[in-house]
Length: 204
Image (tube, rainbow, N blue to C red):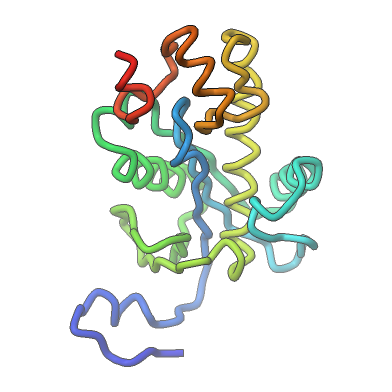
């Protein structure tokens, strides 16, 4: 369906439905005080439907883990990418997130005809793209991407917890919980903390 014409010509072009492969894109880890921001891109296979796809934040950890494996097995292709702590501190979290999204799309084995991105900002891509606010609850491919990104980052935090058990990354996944802030006060930042984020910067 075509939407009403916009004063911004790029949105007119992006509002058209086109045939071909559609990739959904979402991220995980914009808010935490530590670790990379992770993005995923997924092209689903209509012949292999996946039940229960939803915004990853509304699923239990066990359900996310099971869907992660099912998505990897049934999707036509998928890609997970990161932007590092160093890139977050150098570029800022928004630009680092867009960079991770671009890397995820470019990592797809198949080139999509159109990319649907959760949120209101688009990475620079070589294909048609459209931002959809609340897309992780509306578009199955974006829901799948949100699950891949979330599970990948949670697993990364579990590994980080083994190297820095004093911070409790396995529990809070890097978010600025009270326990995490206390650990920061006691031990100072580690190499994976984002120095551009205020609670960390104030301790440096």
